[in-house]
Image 1: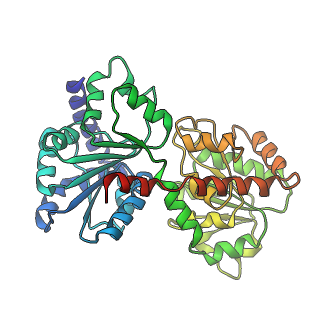
Image 2: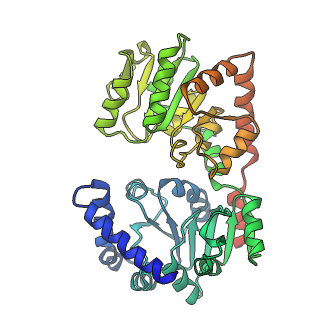
Image 3: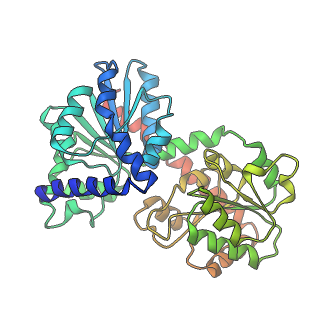
Length: 407
């Protein structure tokens, strides 16, 4: 199994290398790793490195509450942050609370040794799903405390398969597991791991704090004009198609916002082709003209999280591919949450469905039925309150982690 893992790593690297000749994201992935060791050797590292590793942007959002409270408690801690993906790195490199930000070199024995020897971390935090065999075992063999934050474990993961015993050995490398739910704790306990604490999702701390004093994009506020506003956020083509069909099927006095996951010009043009003429792109909007349009297309990055404070219903992208985007941000502002049918790996989606704060959408008819239901009596207001309370009640993961770490 381990030999297969090592071979897979090299094959994956080779495939990305080939793809980098014609794929910009793959090129970023390769180029970003090419100079990591040179850059590390140029900086002055302290003896108080806390290393956080995230796959991408979503995991960074789970790491931020812990990073920021650590720095607040002890400003002498040096935060070194690494990413697997370009999307995470390109955003995270501007994260001011981190002292240093790098790509994680691919997981080979030599890279793991070289990287860890250079940074010499005091503590290491892997976020949610990050399991890298050579890094983990080198950390364990050097008695470096290593933690998993906001972990989720499911029976279908390789750790718990009859043929996954070698892979499961990686779990022995963790000093402690901070998991999101009871089922994860039970799975680990049944495998003999008692170093587990249910803390919940650190993102709940993050989104709740942001909801208390968010930035208020003036153009978005002007656009919504206190009307019922429905947003499709972090959308992919399937959500956009259903959303456009819904807009065309109703004559209700709503406002609509489309905030695609990918804002390259081709994707924006594809969205425009789905719509009638009553839309404007954010990049072309002004305070004077934005109110006259029914549909707003967000064609920039950085404002989506704070846009949700001006919307009422959020149809979140990724639910048709099994890669559901962040539903906690809109829920923190009381949005009723909608998403596609592939949400079983996201326990927050299941939680919100169980309290009727979220609904599954497969076709435009589902969307029409849900919207009609929400407009009956005060259903919309009741569900918005339910979702706000869910976020508020779920806080505290960060404090539980720091208490366990005795920091």
